[in-house]
Length: 327
Image 1 (tube, helix red, strand yellow):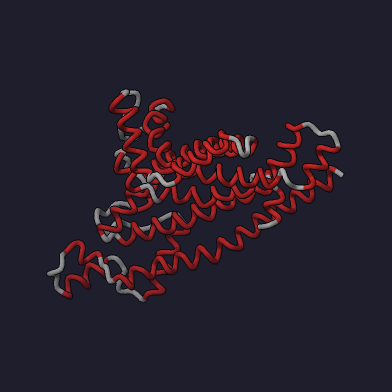
Image 2 (tube, one colour):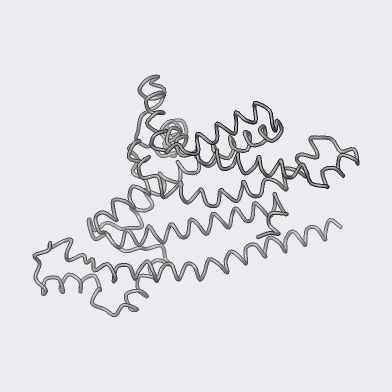
């Protein structure tokens, strides 16, 4: 019996990975093709950035020849895609720096903040959602529902300003900005990322809490819970073995959407806390017309979305099998 369960679990795991890979491959190639085609449609050129609008056609042609932009479109795409598959996104049109290096520096900062924000949001959201469902209809349930409704509409940059005023300016407990890598010490790293992570976590808290409360309330009304009570199972076992496993799926599924947005959509928050992150790098590159940098940002964003959703699907398959059957 245990061997059969292990085989079925392994089959479900492989099926989840296969489905995700089957989706990732065409999505990746379509996304890279569209991303690369944006340069041709935009009319941007490194010659315009380097020589200005008054450049002669001959000078523009010489610069574009150096960048290989005089070659046929598909040849350019193949050379670029070959580099992408090896983790190389080319050279910045603005400063001549390696785009992969620039993205890596910004991504390290944003991932630090986003992962911590996701952990904080998930833990608080699961706690609040569980308490609200357990005290359904009471003042505590209404208070939690009102709280998550309020925090869900608060922009992260507003929360960030308030946190800086309280903890950095008012109390002087934490730095108001900057970033220190975790390799230089967990304490200094945490002190610099905790405020931006808190500012970004509020939306995660609200979504996870709402989804979990709804799922728990619905799960407690199912017949299998009544059957478990009749069989004499304790409340704790009923909650963890039956109710939570079947109710947590939608809450975890929301994280697949939230994480990529935390990494890439935090431009204003990064400005407030003086962070040179991935979102700020993407914004600066777009404003400067740095096409290779923008293309690299888009490709990395696609990979982040697909990989993180693969991880969420695997976790759902282990924690909430019922949720996976609906995938």
